[in-house]
Length: 441
Image 1: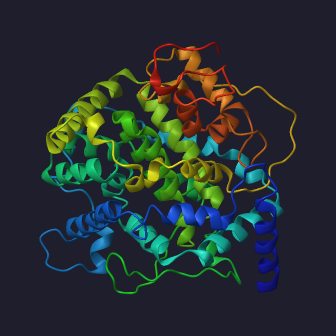
Image 2: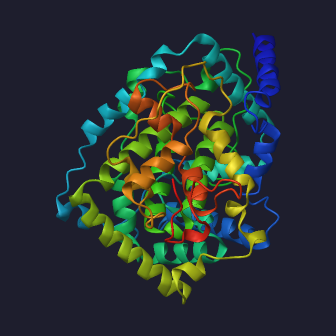
């Protein structure tokens, strides 16, 4: 059995560079991801990562002087960090049960996947998990144990704005933001029960290395997770939180998307999730955020939280948010060009696509709302059109009916970057720099 999976892993590694013209291989991806950890070459970014880690540990400790593993189970945002009373007094119905069922329907194609796709799904976990650096493993542990907080979002804001975010968050100056973002997460628990997919480290004769904790509790306890594997609850958290913050801080929209992708990747580093778990959670999180942003009642709460966030960050920065968000490229690994390659990789993890007849991608009503904040100079029709232009090819796992294919193929990273920075030889998209002068589509 071990030999079989070793061969599968080798086959996967060979196929990674041949499935798509510009596909990244696993060593490339790992190198890109490592730059967004405390192993980064940037002193300023490493300082932000250390502050993030320390703040998380302090938040979990609370008034206790020490941190024990038993405290992790109940660790969550307290009254200072999140104003839950504000959410409750608003009386907004998040309709969580309906959203959970919509998520199950959206991921229905999973049940029809062939055995060889699931085998490659496991082989990908083994490859990423076994080859992960210490930096990636530490980052993954911090992400995992910080699920109930917003600290992880700071590193995608850049060293200066990220530090301001942490300070404002700890002071309770983002208590409406924190409450709304966490209240907007839709649990994947029912989907996990429905699909019943066993976690990779529980598969007989797997080669997964379970990572000992040397980053949070620091007791060398090997990190594991319970319940079903598909879809990933942590990744759903990562994408929901990052995307909502990106809608509030469009100056860092793309880096926050990349942070969501990194958050999902960290679950594979730990060996507790498969690529398909990550892809599925990206799909439902995008769909859920779009659903809420199209609801006028939710938008009222969202605007109040956004106002609080931007005012608090500018106060902490002592300058405009736009200026605070800009730092030297060497200290901002989330804005380097290679992150586009990383994000594209996480759309498929280079799992095989089946050959399908070319089909027009149908954009669900209201999906274009996701691009309103970063691309305010575009019309509704133009936002919908750029979603189609930048979409992933059809036929990858979890594509199916029109809705499934759209949310699986949606590439928000490229949609935004293409609108702002079109290729020099492609005059059919948009002018660079967010100009209100729009070229012919």
